[in-house]
Length: 350
Image (tube, rainbow, N blue to C red; front, side):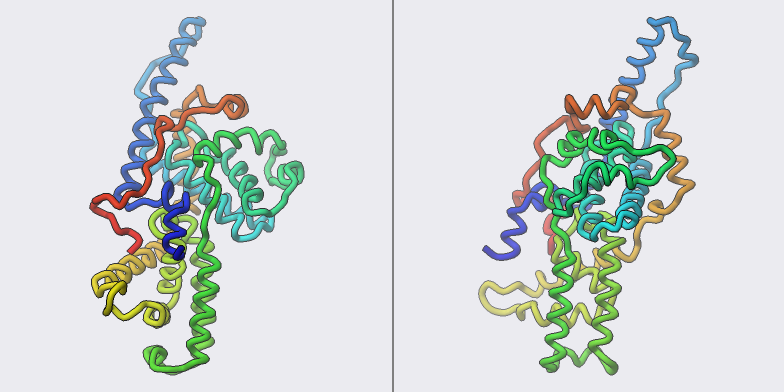
């Protein structure tokens, strides 16, 4: 089985890979369904209060979060997850997996239903288990900074909800090892010499490779996690795009060394090579333009204040919900499998 065939057999490709239009439609559907459920739940709560003789005041239309505001809130807590992982000195793989768990969960669930703050802790702790980085629950909870102590129950209460939202698929394939292999390949090219390196100009090529390696690694540990890159491309294309963002001529030299010349049976056509190059360019541009809302405290506070008034009152107690489970915003429907259909954005993997 080839590497590409192995990846296409993975749950990451089957369940968590999208075209841009699919991703936007998915989020819009989740937001619309959540807003409908939130308004209905708030109305039921008001009716119950009325029956109990409680003055609920003037009833107005519930101002729900927009898709953009949901992305801002989730993105902000993804950034906080990364900060917490660094504070706890967890490996890059644990940090990256935790962020992807959070992003995957909120594709089919809304912050209006489940606030990201408690899910952030659960995602990070679950990632320590799936990435084989043993951490005692009591030790993890005790090390969480904050005015109010975090209990082990706070961490694990939403765990079933999280795993349910992840479709019980815990593998996250990262681009980190691929980048290391690519850099080794580039250094091997330097050792061999040859015409493929002529386009790099004068100077210390090895030093240039090390600088590009450092920049690409930084992009993979930051922008790649905070953007939609993991949803839009494969791990192999992701590290290549990061290298392209760090040093485009160097990335093109590497591609020319591993991409067969478009001639002969079973080899990619010129159009396919151009398609791959265009895809890598688009992802590299995405990596160079991370969303600003991950560090915008004022905007996060504004959205957080808004969500306080449009939360589903029936979904606030995560401990109780964790014991009995709950339905996601997509109604628990089985997610589609890739079948090579004719979507307008098909062929996202180049």
